[in-house]
Image (cartoon, rainbow, N blue to C red; front, top):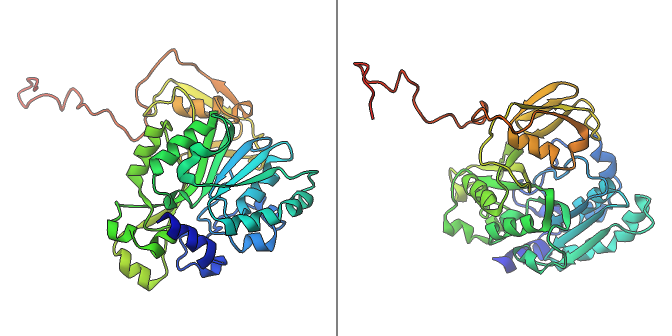
Amino acid sequence: MRESVKDYYGNVLQSSDDLKTNACCTDEGMPEFLKPILSKVHDEVMKRYYGCGLVVPEQMHGLKVLDLGCGAGRDVYALSAMVGETGKVVGLDMTPEQLEVAREYQDYHADVFGYKTSNVQFVEGDIDHLEDLPFDDGYFDLIVSNCVINLVQDKPHVLKQAHRLLKQGGEMYFSDVYCDRRIPQNLVDDPVLYGECLSGALYWRDFLEFSKQAGFTDPRLVKDRPLTIENKDVEAKIGHMNFYSATYRLFKIDGLETACEDYGQAVRYKGTIEHQPFFFELDGHHKIETGRMFPVCGNTYRMLNDTRFKEHFEFFGDWSNHYGIYPDCGTPIPFADSTSAQGSDGSACC
């Protein structure tokens, strides 16, 4: 399947118009600040874009970033504008044809963004073997990926290696395709469905488990949307399976717990993160309004206090008192209350 994917993206696909479904290509909900940046990306790079979401997290100036499956480099060049000349973006891909296009325009993009030298590097390699990359443990501040993890064979291994490459307080921020069930092997073996980012998609619960096993204890869903295939032949093959494009952020932070525990803590956002003057949206459940006291669980407290976001918040509370599970965690206490725990005659049951 690896060679099939390599051929599909290196030879079969010459532009996004060659895709047979819409699973691997959308810029839905693009923020306004990103449009002028992408307008400077060379047309030849833009037409070879096959992403399923946006991988543009906040506060990236000066960061070292790794893009897994960078293709012709659209996201690499967009990110290079946001990390600035003091930052660095490394693009990894296994497809020589795509990397040839990406490398051809390095000087062009350095010039158009006003840099003396290029702040990007392209590496030919296999995402299944991140251990072969010439970078030390904890080298990167941020790892991104745009609709590529579904194409790799050993997804748990990729997540473990990504965790190794991140520094403490770093994060993996990526978009990918997920399914509402495990996909049968006959569809996994279909080269077109696999190349179209469908039959390699993880069952969403398996993804959560793999992330936690890799060390990303509390995966946070940023945004999601259902995928409409819009190809009758493909729809006939997949039957009643439902697919979704989703963006997750996975933090590498010591001390994260497996559930949202309540320590009576709160934060107040200063409104100082670039392009986020009125609120900061950590994930789909945490839209933190500027200047307003915002109660948080212990994990959210750490995600803001132990990362690049710290200077943009005020923090209240500590770890001296524990009040149980956080009310909005979705994990209620499993025990019946004192009333329901008694028999009809008032005696206790066991």
